[in-house]
Image (cartoon, rainbow over the protein chains, first blue to last red):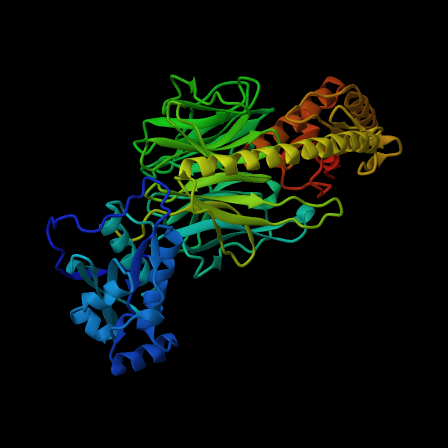
Length: 446
Length: 173
């Protein structure tokens, strides 16, 4: 049961309210907005009920901690220390004493309450503009208690959207490759976790090498490369049922898979006789189409969000560069012309940018450029990093980074990192094991 | 007044900076000279250009028949030494006509994963094509690329990388 429906039954959102607080996310935000997240208030009876089911002392406090952590991680908000709060959560939710919140320099305030209602978790929350002394948003929803973390993520998404004007990316998951063991005999498993690192789960056992998992648009399916029986092939995995099947069973190696934006096709590379070309496979009728036809290496294809174009990686000029073409393979055009090699192009969900990995003078960079190749911007430099994946709102990139190994074979690690499109707010994403090849899901609730 | 003071501070800072820079230059110069000596000593005999020529990771299919060939960065062209190795393998395979092999193509860690998978495949096929020109049937040779997934040397240095850019002929039966 992956898809859980949230019932929004109380929406008192002020229609077209006068713009109150606003957070600009287009520039590096060096002054995050001070925000107070008052713990969600909870009555004693509900508290006891949730304690029995979830084994959490105070679920109201837990949910607001999720919200707080999300807001902090975004880099756009500065959640204030709870110790300084003067007003009790239950009273604040009824009517905040704005002078009190103003005193601790909060500009925005989140209040709310949790109820145990017919075996369900019922949450309502409000967002307040402290300076204007006004309510900006009020929402309520009901779900099964075990979904409490997602409630925190959805609250964050709503607050983020109200204050920045853009959709959030908190109620999402990351699929990645979990790594263990020595570098020469690495064991790799598919793993999935919430965007904040919670609920980590391994999806394969590590018996065969697996690489480059990617979500479909509804985030129910994953396409990836598996070396099952030493035959590197593109596979499809249904996350809910655990069903796996081969989709790229061609006489050679199939790799570098991704879904088309409508989820109906898989685009991938097929290598045979020393030549890699790009193919698509229709998942319904299994019709295969050859998209590129060139004796060079053509790989790492990624569709534009409207499905009309494909960006990909090719060494037809002699070295790895980024190209775009129409989705039928016509009008191939090179777009990367800077110094160095370029790889792993990924089209932004907003359509305007392509993220990439660049190798220049022994350093690896994650960067972005416009779809015509102009406006190249490098966001981060390191010894080794690659494979950016976009947050669903196109504001954050997640990628992996490997450290240098010393001559005696020590010091190697692979970890996930995230960085804002602005180049600020670089963060380590915690995973229980080493990790690589991250792919960000779409928003799970909409 | 304020402006003047700032300028004074700046000039002082620039003077200091100049001194630091001069010293730094001297130091880096010395470092460069040292490292140049160090690398040339370390790699001579093991690498030519950036192709590995040593034998410490090489295994043997039979006496005098090495199992692997090495490549330059981003290249899949066979070197003279590689062709000689492959001719020995072809002669051995002709004598042992029941044996089939898997050519495992590899890349070093200094490249993106997907491109390296394709590059490993291209390298293994370069070896396959050469074996075929020496009379080995393509039915006896299969190709498997590991990209950068199975390095033989885990180090992050040019010598380790040169050992990892390889195509290995593995007996399949």
